[in-house]
Image 1 (cartoon, rainbow over the protein chains, first blue to last red):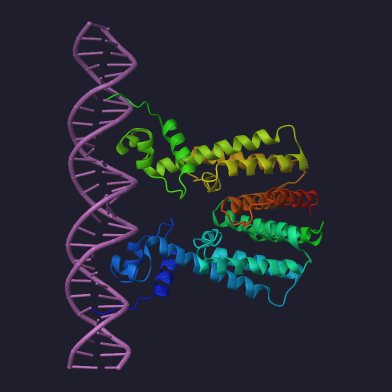
Image 2: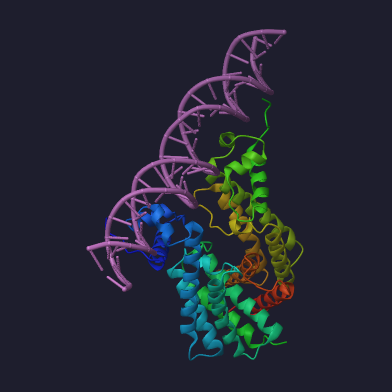
Amino acid sequence: MPRAGLTTEVVIERAAQLLEQTPDGELTLAMVADSLGVRTPSLYKHVDGLAGLRRGIMVRAKRLLAAELTQATIGRARADAVRGLARAYRSWALAFPMQYPLTILAADSGDEADVAVSEAAVGVLYTVLAGYGLSDDDAVDAARFLRASVHGFVSLETGGAFRLPIDLERSFERTVDAVVTALETWQR
Amino acid sequence: MPRAGLTTEVVIERAAQLLEQTPDGELTLAMVADSLGVRTPSLYKHVDGLAGLRRGIMVRAKRLLAAELTQATIGRARADAVRGLARAYRSWALAFPMQYPLTILAADSGDEADVAVSEAAVGVLYTVLAGYGLSDDDAVDAARFLRASVHGFVSLETGGAFRLPIDLERSFERTVDAVVTALETWQR
DNA sequence: GCACTAAAGCTATTGCTAATAGCCTACGAC
DNA sequence: GTCGTAGGCTATTAGCAATAGCTTTAGTGC
């Protein structure tokens, strides 16, 4: 029997694809194995069970999102940077709605790679806020407010909580406008 | 063998309690049956399988949350009402962190009870916004912004995404302050 | 007080899943 | 070419949801 040529990366990438395609979000090892033309136990050579697979998808998702956010803010500052960040964030979430919820899971403090990518994503945000001259408590509060508003909107949108699919663009822009305005006078 | 005296409500309430106690959020019929001193198949007499149980917990959670929100806004208007609403929302979510995510799931349009409680919760919000004289597009945008910010904060907080557990009260108050300020001049 | 019935519990069983043990063979290093 | 490792496999176990069909409780009509 010829080898399938699997690697950890291949398995996780395929699993992430499948996750986006399954309507209920219930990913099983059997599905992944089947899609790769392999038997279920074979996956254990590359991934530490279902938990390991999920963790791999999560870290990968965080890494991809962080890269998008970084890309979206280079060469920009203040309101311009915040808008770029918010739009990139939303775009990524809408493109990968099943993986998006994984990106907001708290990092396991014992998982080095997880902590690294999680901090990378939040780091972009703090860098942008530094442009407003915010520091210490002000920066923490502002970061939380910014994250809350953008994540909240995207979370509700991808979750289908906004009944009318119409005008979501305008609602998002106005939400970002409100955040930007608030940040202008955030310092106490 | 004596009867256990189960009803649909008893089963769902116990399941909701168990859900809050399980660290990973994985609720099984076996756990519920065991907790009620009954065998798993017996639950099917009161609840339509695991899916029906989950749906029951969801509708119950939405109903309880909507009641809290209603309670928190009576006799209040504008900024006062928004603050009451936001605080009640967060309090409920922190008290029932495992049930909270169920409350933002989009209602199944074929499920009458689900649609009713979902609309009741959102209705409170629109009532409060009516106090600002907002209507049509302005009201929709404002409602989405308000929901996004409050849900986003609570979602990140209960999910453990805010690393430092300290000063969350202040961060939340500042977030609500920002929302209130934005609503004052929301009309275009 | 007693037969009848509907509902509430049960056992037994099926099929799917994750996970582990242990075997077999492809394939690169030398 | 041979040898060792690693990547695939079959077989098996245990837990889960779900269904079929049985038994018994408990309320109702007479």
